[in-house]
Length: 108
Image (cartoon, helix red, strand yellow):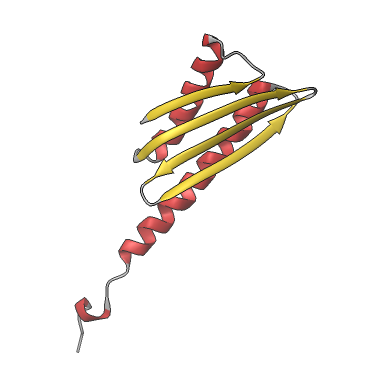
């Protein structure tokens, strides 16, 4: 997985980079087939925004979270991304579980 962290009106410090890396590792604990991840952090007066775009096989997931604190916005963002990845994973697993009618066994 490649991870790109960019900032608008913000310089990405090593502490922020490390915090984002540790938090996004939580998402990979549930689902390891993430191809690419882009994180955009921005600061406006009294509003810190964090956005993430994750490329999965067959789908792109996008989340956004805002808060007064940048670290709190990152926490909210990772919670949302985690829920979306779990939802995508369960849908993909449910789709595979169904057998086509031709291959179902007939019990007499």
